[in-house]
Structure formats: structure tokens, C-alpha cells
Length: 215
Image (cartoon, rainbow, N blue to C red; front, side, top):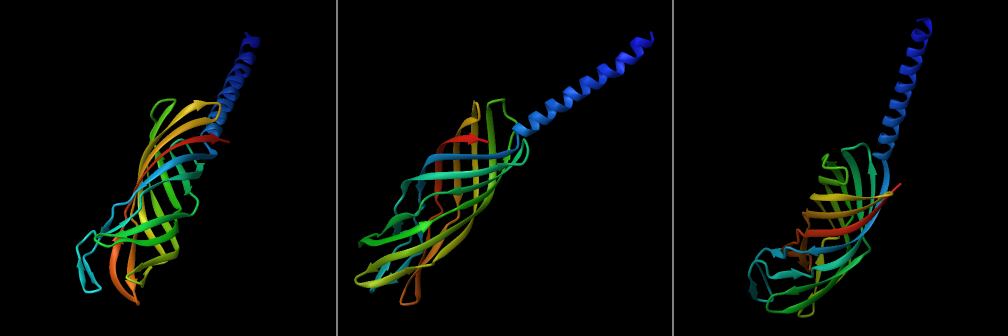
């Protein structure tokens, strides 16, 4: 009887230790860094105000900016099973700008990093849907735009809100697939001789497919 009483606490202690180790291991798997690379299609909204230039009245939405396929690099930190922070990066991009009835105005370069807070739903063991919100900070430079020889300028940066939905699909061994859709507020004033002509409302839809690694 005495042996039974002394053995029981040991068994309970061993079981508790095993449970704590299991919980700790599970928590470790749900936290930490991961990175991913992918292909992203940026579809510009091409909205703009009506304006007058060179004695010509241009209708609303006359300014269009090139949509394009770009590479994407993400660095993410997972805080727990539900929350993570994402930094979304790419390489500097060059876009062509056109004006309806006139044609090509020229090009500019931009770099649009996103900083996102993401909530992951429980989903299944492999399929993890999520939603996110954050901010986009777009740097604009090397603007080479003109109409009839008159130089045009763009604002050098744009800050806007961004929202996203998507999912990760776990492939095992620290690898996963990702599908993601973002909508970002991105606007820039177009000016000539220091006077604003119109505001280009680009507000792109951003669709990405990527492959990731967990550390």
C-alpha cells in the first residue's frame, strides 16, 4: 500500500512533465521567423480627376499607370497561433504612364514596402486562412514624365492603408505554400510647373502566390 502511494505522485509528476514538454514544443512550432518568395501581379485602378492642360480638357480617369508582374519577398514573425507581423518587400519597379488621347508620358520608379499585422484563423492542421491590415509606404523617384515637352512631377512618396486576405498551406518539414490578395491605398499628385494637375489614384489590387520556409 505504501509503495502504491509513493509511486502515484511519481507517475503524476512524469505525466505532468511530459505534458509540459509537449505544450512547449507545440508553442515553439507556432512562434518564430519565416520567410517566403513569390510572384505578384499588381493591378492598378487607374483613377484620376478631370483636369485641363495645354488648352485641352481631359476627362476623369485619363491617366493610366502600367500594371505588372513583380517578385515578392516577405519576412514574417509569428507571435503565437493566431498573430504575426509581416514585412512585404520587392525590388525597385519601373512603371510606364500614359494619358488618354496623348499616349506615353514617360516612366517613374517606385518601391512599395508593406508592414502588416495578420490574424490567422484556426483552420485545419494544414490549411490556415488569415486576414490582415497595415500600412504601405511607397517611395517614388526617377520621374521622367512630360507632355508636349513640359516636365511633369509626382509626389516623392505615398502612405496608405492596406488590407489583405489569404491562406497558408503547410507542406510539412517547415515548408508551406501561400496565396494572398491585398488592396492598397496609393495616390500621388501629378503637377506641372509647381501646379497640381490631377491626383493619380492607383489603389492597386495585389495578388501573390508564394513558397515559404519556417525557422
